[in-house]
Length: 370
Image 1 (cartoon, helix red, strand yellow):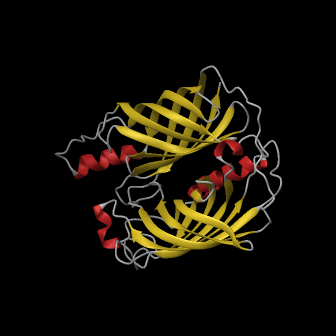
Image 2: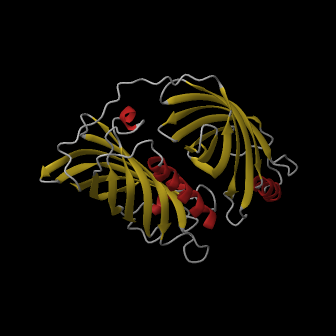
Image 3: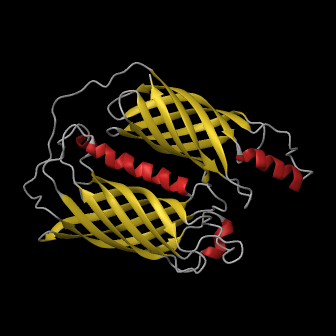
């Protein structure tokens, strides 16, 4: 599972590297610490996890956030967000699921005169009680101790109510999954109510948000992108083994403003786990649709959107398999992830590919934009 650690660590580096490479350092420096207690319920997204929905999960999230004031070339376009790290502890109050600890990189986005905050965090989680075919066969949610985790937090927040202390409350959504790096992996989602306190490490009362009145022309000709992605994954058949995969993608994009670009392209998938899945299905179900001689390769076409923040961008794509020799999870797929630019041409990507809510793989890639 070391490769999972590398993937999530790489993502965290995306977020931290973005800030260290800003054209200007954030000035003045100001940061906030907040502590939130949460309690809620596991969301039933799959009938197979009904036996895991028993007690009410609870836990705590501790976060450090660095404020921005527009002393750069990107934060004013997003209403001066915060960026930082979060540490969470969650007790599922279920003996099969155990307890999880997670570390995240996050952004805070502000609305309604900066009283409403939306936090988006992505990171790495560790579970105390993963699936074991002898000792914990009921935990089909976590097939490995190490997983990726995503959390969303929507809070009403008031700062500096008493000196530098404030309060906040709202809703949190926490997702755990190893993205089918190892089976089983039905994943777990928690929807919870949270309440907490925040503390400003510095005096921000006299700090002003900077506004750059100059406008920059982001108009570009159509650009062509070529990406090589790779990773490991396993089918849903427990014990079928982990196999490497590669994906070759080519697409065109058109910048349509400061924040966005539209994409259209095609790609070919070399998913080696499908070889084993095809063999297994043909033997286990000899009268089924899979005969055993099907091609394991697939070819997709897709459209997408890229949201530029700084050197970091968020990518979302919707695809359709034009070449689909074996029926596996449906002909449509989605991809979401992050892209980190090293210069105007070269970039790295970390993405999750799934069929609806069913993850297939975490993809790590390198690409060029010409």
